[in-house]
Image 1 (cartoon, rainbow, N blue to C red):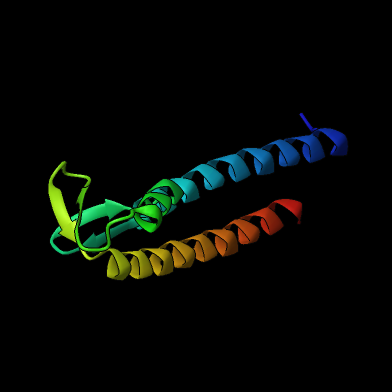
Image 2 (cartoon, rainbow, N blue to C red; image 1 turned 180 degrees about the vertical axis):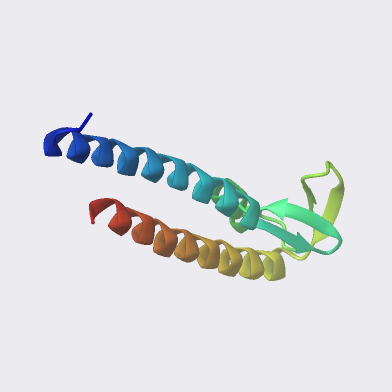
Amino acid sequence: MTTTPLIDKLAEEIRLATDFKTNKQILREKIQTDLHLTHNGGLFKITPELLSFVATWPDPLGLYLEDVYENPIEINQQEFLAKARQHYQSVMNEWHNHYDAIKRIRKV
């Protein structure tokens, strides 16, 4: 039994859309893992909320943050903030580049 070109085209579009959604989800999961940063013996997931909290902390002398393992880790506010911002931006740039690549494949 042969299929019509219209059905073949439709099947290909559905496959590409499904592949895109799957690849997008896999990429997001990878990036969520990449957002983890080690600092002073702790492991932190760098989020915009964490960056904002650290940036607005009023006491520059001492700050303890809970890491992903629920341990209180002492950090140097300025050092941590600089390292975390750089790491976050690097991961977001990587995500954007990979997302653009899978988006282009979908449109081809």
